[in-house]
Amino acid sequence: MQHLAIFGGTFDPIHWGHLLIAETALQQLPIEKLIWVPSSNPPHKKASCFRHRLEMLHLATQDNPAFTVSSVEKNRPGVSYAINTLIDLSAYFPNIHWYWIVGLDTFQTLPHWYRGHELAQMCDWLIAPRLLGGENIAQSEIICKQVKQKLGEQSITIHWHLLHIPLMGVSSSLIRKLYRSGKSIRYLVPENVRAYITTHNLYSENSE
Ligand code: ATP
Image (cartoon, rainbow, N blue to C red; front, side):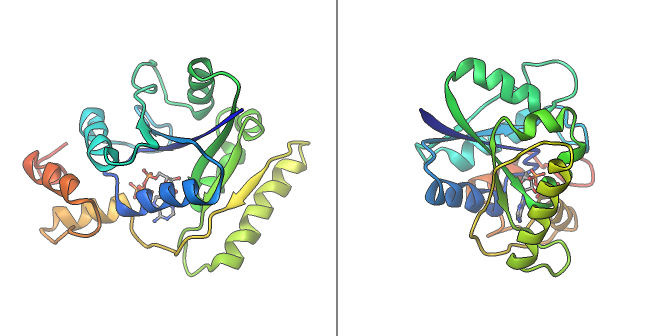
């Protein structure tokens, strides 16, 4: 059976934190391919133009043969729910052991996702610890166990693995904020992504 991972997000823009998480997942689990899935119409936040986010994902991931980028969410009308993405991808790739990659902040909200209880059992969860206000790795583990327990109370069993990765304070919102205020975003995103942002003047006061 093949092992594939999905990394979903708005990627607005993709940054080095995302890339390190993806590479770490490939290193620490027996994953053959990682599918980047930009959210088209996320339920929980606003995202800028899908085409630009997709293009930046292609630029950032093109040199890694284990990475692929999927437009599956763009091809589906309505809100981009994760469970529908997994169902759609399972139709393309049958008989797969699936992993879903998330940051700790996102994982904490899993019990509240649309059909989250079903989705929770359809894949293994790979969690990247994230600075949520001073947490260390041990505290990340406690948070994961709390999520597992909360789902367990409703007879939902989940499998999760905490990725061993340095905590990174980088976020897409930080990058957008820095760029908007004329500050450097060099070394927070790959160079070709930085060039793309500059060329298309994304994230300035006047952009969408
Ligand atoms: P924003 O700042 O706009 O909310 P973001 O940086 O969180 O964006 P997303 O595209 O929303 O980026 O993230 C996709 C996934 O990657 C989410 O599950 C998120 O938790 C995780 N993630 C992003 N950055 C980090 C980070 N620095 N450490 C751990 N997880 C992260």
